[in-house]
Image (cartoon, rainbow over the protein chains, first blue to last red):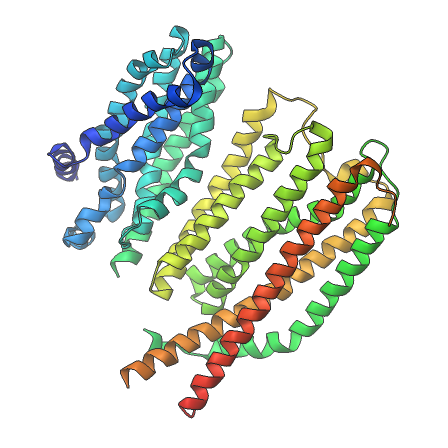
Amino acid sequence: MIALFWRDMRLAMRAGGGFGLGLSFFLILTVLVPFGVGPQSEILSVIAPGILWVGALLACLLSLDRIFALDFEDGSLDLLATAPIPLEGVVAMKAAAHWVTTGLPLVIAAPVLGVLLHLEGGAVRWLILGLIIGTPALSMIGAFGAGLTVGLKRGGLLMSLLVLPLYVPTLIFGAEVVKRGALGMEVQGVILILTAITLAVWALLPFAAAAALRINLR
Amino acid sequence: MASLWQYANPQKFLAVSRAVLPFVAGGAAICLVVGLVWGFFFTPDDYKQGSTVKIIYLHVPAALMAINAWLMMLVASLIWLVRRHHVSALAAKAAAPIGITMTVIALVTGAIWGEPMWGTYWAWDPRLTSFLILFLFYLGYSALWQAIESPDAAADLTSVLCMVGSVFAILSRYAVNFWNQGLHQGASLSLDKEENVSDVFYLPLLVCIAGFILLFVALVLLRTQTEIRQRQLKALEARERMA
Amino acid sequence: MPDLGKYADAVLGSYAVTIVLLVALIGHSVWRGRRVRRQLAEIQARNGK
């Protein structure tokens, strides 16, 4: 299983593997927002946490369809499904590799891009904390969506429609962490809920995603 | 795959629903007409909300059906996954457009009702926001049915989506309540039945709710019949092409 | 028509939207039902069932 994890990591890092794609998208989005909203720092610093969270969501989506699609096309997914490791484990390893190559870089990039959006200094650590806890959930939920649509030729847009509503709880609580933390309010409860969501998603969705893959591999 | 379609269960469904449908439809028509006419013409205005209280006869039943349609889809999906009754899977597929329509009615009437109270056509009230999210789940569910070619795979995948979606819908409900609670305490739209307990409003409301429920059942029966016939049609067309 | 006062637009608008949507839903369901039933009958007749 670990071998699978490293294999997916290497594939993602290779040229054309989509590693830089999510980050570049994140950057472009952050640059576009002030053009749309105006450069006043008062406005930007209020919406900065939300923009960065939404940007992270969308950037995650970009590289999700390749989680299974490439292996599905060349037949390796069939092999993985019949391998001795459980398909749920395959899903978990692929989602983990996706997080390390997409989610984690987003977490590191967020405070840097936050400078462009006049993100308040006090909010930075809460943003990072929320993103670190929340982005693994995004990868796993995305893996589920990718599993549902793996057989479709242009399933990317449909996958976004399926996955984005599932992102709402993580987004709401992640943004809440930043908002309350920056105001100095009580933030433990929200962090616990966010963590609980991520843990539950990782515990349960691999089964749903594996079920979807088995259906599509029939 | 199509040639393996055994028509036993679906045939029974078609026969039974054909017999029952006129009565359900008739009952729906009666309840809807009676309830809406009663509510619109023969109830007084509300002390606080004026004549807008009459919107309750549309908004509450539609909202209830929007949720109940999803619940029915969830149960039907589970029956499909466990017992593999094709009729069940098709009934879930048939219910989705009805649920979508009910959700839209709930959203639009909710927004129109809120406008005189809030001065704006949309407010991110927890209840309305939850319905907006439900709308998105409905769209995704229907889109997945349309996208997958193999009927059995489509039934399986949409069933899994329905189950996962249900969990997230409930989770989102709590998240949205949490998200909006600090901002507009007390100004959130209280369209609870509890607020208008007096019989004067409650009885016609019950009749309207009954009407909407019967309408939902009638439409599910009708649309499931259509889905079954559509499958038979595709099977025969495929056989014709191969002959 | 009862006196709807200043909320006439809101109330009538709600009823109008709801009725239009329900009629559209019912109409589409019936239309599609009839169409599929007709197509099925045709193909069954063609193949002698």
